[in-house]
Image (cartoon, rainbow, N blue to C red; front, side, top):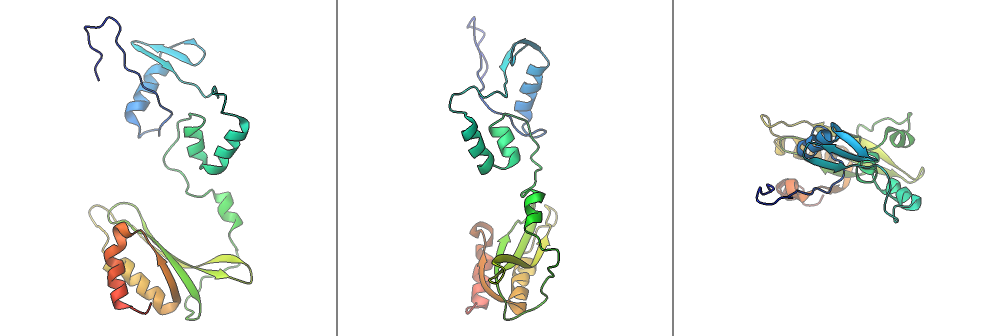
Length: 206
């Protein structure tokens, strides 16, 4: 909305928290415009016709240390910084912190090439044109009481070279079924419904 010139005092009010650097362009432009001005009070900036209050302080009475601790446990690090501490972050973040990943890794483990007696469970994250597509087969080691990565496969589609699900995902699932005893396949039906129907028709006993 445009402030009308017929009113002596007219304003637009924006209430928000920080966004993603390089992506939230409109908000980031307003933020930078405010920070280029004069700090007339603590965390209060004046820049031309813009008055901006931007703080990283916890001002609400319910924002206790206990509550912040809960948020740290529930949110990814960058999500906590952006949503709770009002910090600008990059959207290019790790899905899992490497320290967490390292705690789950057995450096002596080796991939299984083929074992028809090994029960595996497959997860699929599929994309047609942009994100990577991944298929991961895992088993459960009852002796060690831990999940074991058995094998995986990734594909990188692009807008100019979209993924052919039959030649990639479906072929990989059939390969997994030939090499291992596939007990279950989990997937998002939004992209995978047609493939699931074809595979079910081809392997009705799977």
